[in-house]
Image 1 (cartoon, rainbow, N blue to C red):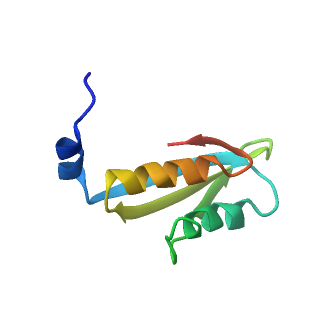
Image 2 (image 1 turned 120 degrees about the vertical axis):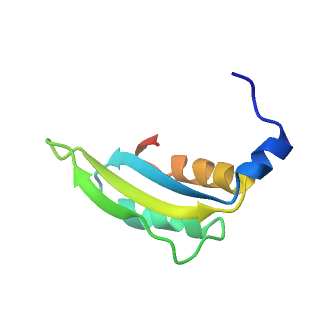
Length: 90
């Protein structure tokens, strides 16, 4: 599979995107995830907690929103993955 060029990427956006974050279940995780979005200029958007692992080690958060550009999606990816305790971003 080849990489898309910028024109092809531009045609895909804006797009409704659904994010799922799996992270360590620690105090302040939801606040830190939401702050990661505010830090890149996305205000008023919040992650919704969805479930905990059977042992209570991990928690899942969901977020659905319209993303304006590929650059914005990359910025979100980097900001969310930088939060301490994030294990996976889908």
